[in-house]
Length: 128
Image 1 (cartoon, rainbow, N blue to C red):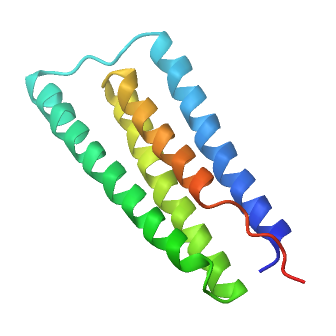
Image 2 (image 1 turned 120 degrees about the vertical axis):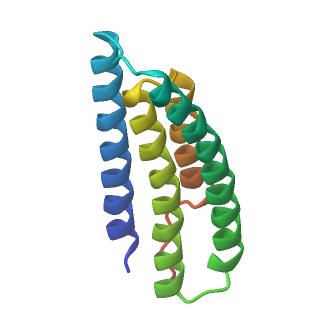
């Protein structure tokens, strides 16, 4: 897979997460949804799950990063996209939690995990 295709995939992932997070922040600025006691308990549990997912995603990205250098270009590109997807999943989970009424820190933890995945797995340079 060529580096420019990976760059396009990376930009698409960044755009999707950024647009969704901005939309949720705008929506929440208009008011938070009202949740009952069960909803608040659910959000507390989901926050713990978010931290577990963030740690797992970063561990997965670090594992993939250690394998990318020794892999073939095609395998390295695939592992890079998988690592980005791990971070994006955590980011989307955090944004959805914030939309449901959790504090903005859930959004921040998710997006920060995505940024860490993007930094740890840059677009591979084309080999000559």
